[in-house]
Length: 265
Length: 202
Image (cartoon, rainbow over all chains, first blue to last red; front, side):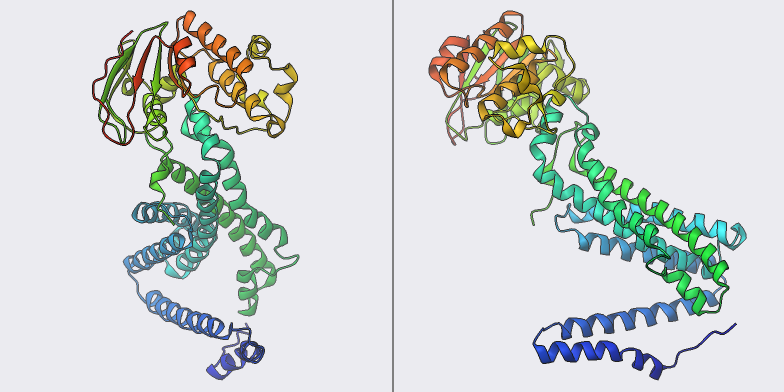
């Protein structure tokens, strides 16, 4: 094993490239130095915090801690999902839908992945579960968010066509079928692109991390394949669940279109 | 028999009226007086308190899709979800006959909808709405985009629908058209509260 531990000065050196960028931005009046600095600082604080938190949680033996941290991760991801929507549903409903979708698909994906990688006896081991949950949530968040965004924007543009189908006796899902298709296609495009490019153009982050940490590249590749398959599956399910939930929010039991449920932007 | 009982449409006081089969009720009133909202509420496209009965069955007693297959709202400007009109029609053998009754050539069915005139689309929208034989037609200004001769063809089609037993509720700004088609009329007043319990039984 050739694991390289980084010191604080090493990290400062790593920031040098960004500092050069910031200086250029300042010198040329591009005005992005401040947002660059804030984003970088935010990243440093968040990653350090999650590192320390994970160290603490990994030291605990009670599975309650794992569950608690997992739940907090889901709620934070749901908040982020809500923040990303330009045309929002009434927020508490949206928050509920987001949490449910993320918990269901991200959580199930993570549990399923860990059960395969590490074996079911390690399900309660936070060292496996939490990082996989984090990756699953990130993927599901992106696809669910794209799906809802496409749906919310499309429903205003295609309101007439959707209502025409409803007036002709279609169910709400039949009336939304072309929009649902589009939402699902938009949401899964990044997943398909990521799988198509993985390894050929972009080195997947997890595999890169494992190789940096001294793992056998072939073993790392196998883990990456497994994780990509499970994450893509979970994210696609997330997109579907979000779209179905979105249609239910935008219509009522009498299959009426209820745009009044979209908050005014 | 279509029976509207204390139907509360936004901006109107509750309305009650009845229209029998083979009858046409015209709804008049200035723009913004709630004519379209009333039709939409009858088709259960907007939430509204109160009751609407068709042959004694209240709208909430049947699945919404089934209600709208029997009680059909026909918007002034029909909206489309596919490229050509044909994709919007149920497959029925009498489509060509319906088209010719409104002076539409059969090739209009396969032309891109964007290339048709507003009047052609309005006629196709009406045909789409009657192709699966709904019992009640709620027509929202069905001839607004048509010249007088074509409008007369649409009126003939509406008369035929009434003759074969349909119930028609017609929103129109054309007093002469109302005179030619309607058996009773209901006038909605602007802004201020309209008269409640207007009885327009035929």
